[in-house]
View 1: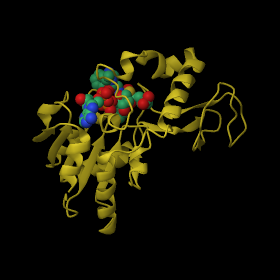
View 2: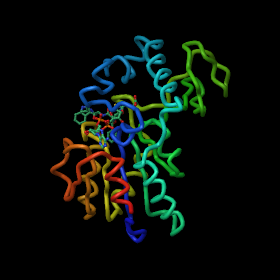
View 3: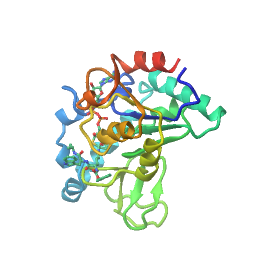
View 4: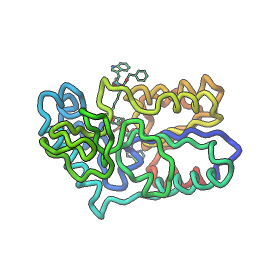
Length: 236
Ligand code: BJW
């Protein structure tokens, strides 16, 4: 098992959830091959057509809650790793995900930083409260906290918006011994720049992905294959 004596930052992307039945974004059959990124994943797209954007995320909420979508061996291995670190001193593994699904949590990880938000939450534009465990957001839905109608938006980070928890993530990258990137294409910043931050801090860098990512040359070590095989092999 990866040693609890190390300070590790793990970054995950859509590839870790592919074998659980959720599409990635940029693979040939990915989400961006079916819908326009500009229309559903930008603040401008939401302003122009709120029902379309709400419908896109409502469909993904329903898919995530389908009984066939379950954490796979990669999520479960990271859950075990996180619990092993928690039994040590509790502060030396930071699990950062770009994914808005809840498969890390369902796979046993207790403390996950969702830098691009969470699908099952909503944010009220009137009172800025986050609500948990939203099934669907209809265009006229009322905020459970302030009651204002029509002001709920998905709790996700669209292009041009600031990802969440950046201070904490950059702090951990500056102090880490090992940075591991799992199932991400390395196309989207700032996450794509984390490997350079970790290298600057003198950390070992490892890529676990189906194929070399955009940033593959930045990693000192790499293993290629499905996450459900690579991640348990790395963790154990
Ligand atoms: C497997 C597998 C298996 C398959 N096993 N692997 C020019 C230069 C630099 C930056 C910019 C630029 N122009 C614009 C920007 C900024 C922009 C950006 O990066 N654009 C690029 C497209 C160039 N970024 C932003 O706007 C971000 N905000 C920002 O930068 O704020 C300013 C700031 C400045 C300084 C510091 C901090 C902030 C916000 C980005 C928001 C991204 N949002 C989305 C949607 C979220 C909600 C939703 O889910 O709908 O996030 S887009 C989408 O891409 C989603 C993902 O989290 C993200 C990354 O995708 P990911 O996870 O890498 O998936 P894929 O599909 O790309 O890759 C999957 C990989 O898995 C592949 O490699 C497969 O091979 C592999 N795989 N099966 C293992 N079984």
